[in-house]
Image (cartoon, rainbow, N blue to C red; front, side, top):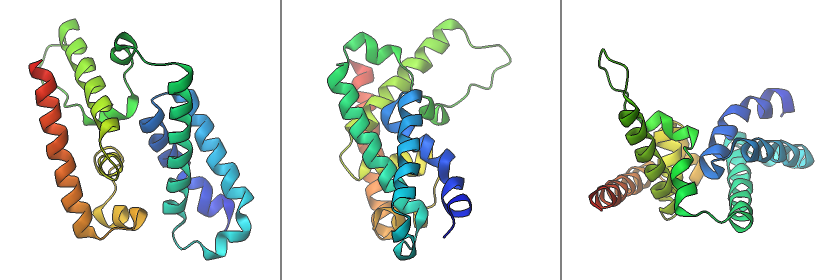
Length: 178
């Protein structure tokens, strides 16, 4: 395995994964850099790694979760901070309005609040549901790739993802009514 050919091409996907977990661009960049450093430090183990993308994603996920925990301890979120931050990866989940008029400030605010709420609800999902939503709906990975990455069968991925989406929808609707 070669670092430039087999490891570096995964940087962008790892960045999106880290950003979806940390919700901070600088932290996500640090996590990806640390992931690359760990990959280089473990180059003696490369021959045993059958799926470099899955291995890198697991390393990145662990580092991002550690980073998020550290950030949460250093800067506890209050209600105003959580609403004012829009994690970028969830922009892919937003449905753009197809009207001739540009969105009004109220539309923009409503979309921002919806994305913030979705981001918060995804972070509250239990494992592996949170990972499945990120990998399928944000990253756009196939069921097969997700199954390989999470050591599940494709049927398990479909069932768990279905349950995650139902849970996410129910929680979202419940919060919208409040």
